[in-house]
Image (cartoon, rainbow, N blue to C red; front, top):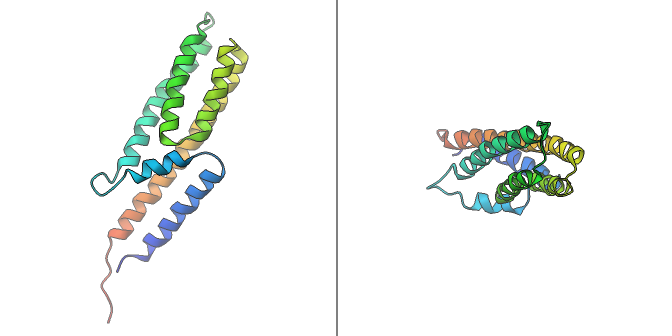
Length: 156
């Protein structure tokens, strides 16, 4: 008999995912990513999302450095970083992050430094929210997997 805690944790995961979809944080691409995970690669989603987080940290740092440089005028560089960010956020289903990137790119195409700074602040906020919620999801998943592995003796 599987531990009852695993069922409760599965329900917690489903509630958190439903919230993230309802808030528009995630889209169906995240579900497609989950479908690629199986017994042969049980940590697939975690590994892909971790790569996304690592690359995103670099992109955010580069964007901030570019915009804080008083001599900055190369908005095409910002566009290149944002295209990378949009592609990677789309690939994991990070809908709100991708949408902020779109608005950020529009400001950069207009050479609007103040708009870019506001968009960067919003992007950092959305990224942190996504990262915190996905870490929460992965923690619940890890607890669920551990609870499911615990077998209780059947009482007669």
